[in-house]
Length: 230
Image (cartoon, rainbow, N blue to C red; front, side, top):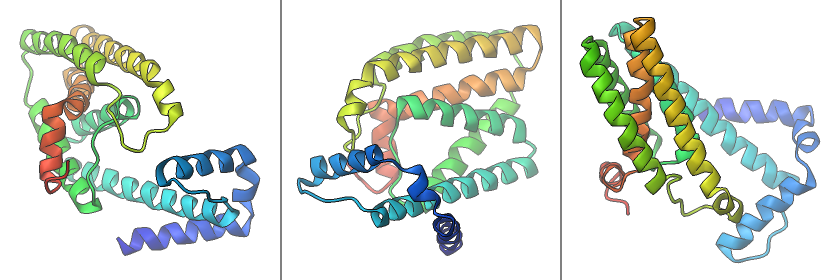
């Protein structure tokens, strides 16, 4: 979107004006980027401050784009009176995604559409459930299934992985499992002892949604929605 690109450029221009990029990035950062390009593009390239500034601008575009989508989805949830469950589903999902990975849409609009569809529909469903024994049974089943999926598929393979990512694969897998267990415990405490059903269920629904996205079936579905990518 033009407004996001414009805002990103203004942000990077401000950072450049105060010479913050060159003060922040070390030679190790430059070398790391050089090694990635050499590995995946099979050519030598010398990274300069201009390259890093371009990367920073791209990062700013991603940041503002994600912030825009986040705020719009929460605004819609507020008017639909499902803000609380949507907020906790989104934040749990996003936190776990950093560990377990997952498929990405190829365009901003498709990603936005998926966010609206998934988070708002789940937020509405969670806001309608109040049967505690049923909820507890679903969460216990979901815990076992989630741990199995995490051990089998997390972190999800990415074509742009570096050697460092590969070395950390097992570490990320077990951190994913730990995150799932902690989320389950928090959810059960909220449901059984504080009667905060909506928050408790929402937290673990965010976990379940992330686990769905790293399964082969979930991945194929989102790739199909994205236009048949493989």
